[in-house]
Length: 501
Image (cartoon, rainbow, N blue to C red):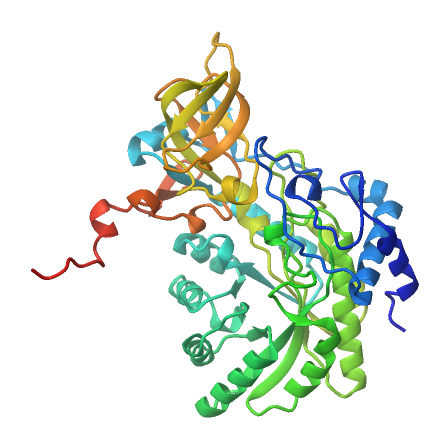
């Protein structure tokens, strides 16, 4: 019998609770309300569209389980929150350091804007996962989309990571960095023929297939190449998640995955297709998860599907529970990694199925900062505005997601009163703010550090306004290594051509 009993769906039909408010089922929750533990910048708050369709028994049942667990386990969950580890970024001798290297020295040597990563922080975050997974057959696949810089991938490959990719470009990056193709899973909804063919030729571990059309295409390519394709069907469990609307992926109407109602039939179909070897089922419900309940509900659905398939003589080898594990940017209190893994392990029970996980942000997010310099200080109305040399071209998360990042003064002023400030970039867009309403005393030419930018920072940067992308540095103790040099303006034009005379 399905553990997600339908009678519980009435709880969510009546109301859904977010940030202490009652919302009718099917109502989109704004970014500000969706994550009460995540402070957002004041000013315009983005609201999501109608991303939860009402009237679905499957989604209602899942949400009801989440709602009931949320109340029953609140105190227990909070007692097991991730402990704040010692940051590799700390002030000493009057200046902020990355491990044992002064940020002032790094700015002098490499200029700004500059991304700086701590090798220690990445290594320790990866170790948190491996410790929690001890004794469980598993493959830990780092989500390359979080930060695909080659040296970061190389470091993780040396630590024993597998990789979750979403494009052929990410595949080539992993291989260039020394990653093992047999430890790569290929996700993504829009894989082209050339991408599927290249991944087949490389011999990757598994394709996370997201539609019947993709399955048919992969079958034809595998037969033509005489190379069987290992496949997991990615499920959309219709589990509502309290995170920003732009990064929730397991709700009704999402472009990701196969509807749960169709999943079993498609899995059984996959088991009969030529060139296809069905090895697993997969799921990823969203990013920056700060609660256990939604993850648990999705995990249980996946395992129940695996059980039903086994009863129909379609045995699986693994269950891919995805990633999205939240980190602390401000006042969030995400569960410890061990708690997420404990829920996945409990869902598996004693079944002989390998556990796959796809963390990205949880490994690199807190390991990086963006170093920027104040160019000008001005007044706009009653507001003090710091104009810095980094903007939405370097860090798009604040304008795109209303994301909140701590901003620290690298060399704090003594005796200078702090004021409420906005930190704005040089890009010709009103949305180009890195932070709003921060108490800062910074003056022109001072350095600021935008914290927790190791994930979805440099990897999402752009050349808008013809701005070269920033350099990146990896710090290891007292050693700083340039792992990506700053682009030049000439390089921005290198692939273009003028019209003939």
